[in-house]
Length: 236
Image (spheres, rainbow, N blue to C red):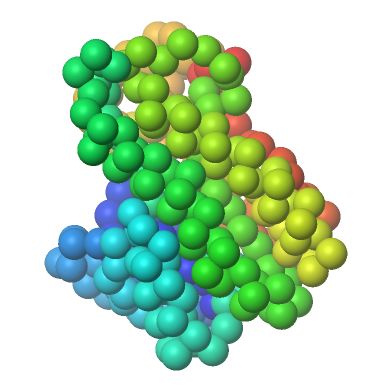
């Protein structure tokens, strides 16, 4: 199996690439500037019996997505799974938000998801078991006022729309497209209190990893267009 996880040098992305690594699998680790952490992630993947492939690119543009796609074609010759994990987060009141910050948030969320998927969709279509998993947010399906996180939620809500649209367009090719909606994870900085989370605890990287692992499995071959909440009841 050939798997690409964007933004996988550290944090959730690294946890996902390690979760999916297994003997015989090719794992593409993408990073923008975190070369050291990416190399550490590659070593961890290799230790799990998989084959790590490193690629650097700025996914804030379609050019970066094309760079990654060209690398995948040259190194792997195909692709079975795409996990769109890359994405920035900023907390800033709308009154103080710059146009550059707005555009960067949109570029790193919905635009990165769209461009990366479009760049490799031909490979996934011929895979025979193509899987696309997009990372959104547990509150992205709520159309609410977001004065301090507006561009982030515009982007993450857009990811859900892209997910459902491509689930329809890609179903005839046997490609499934789903979204994971994480809640407050225990690696968040700052880490808010868990008192408002119905489950009574923060989510773990493994909680998200388990959901992603299911969606890329054979058991999920008929699951497409789904939004899976992994938030312990947060934002419900």
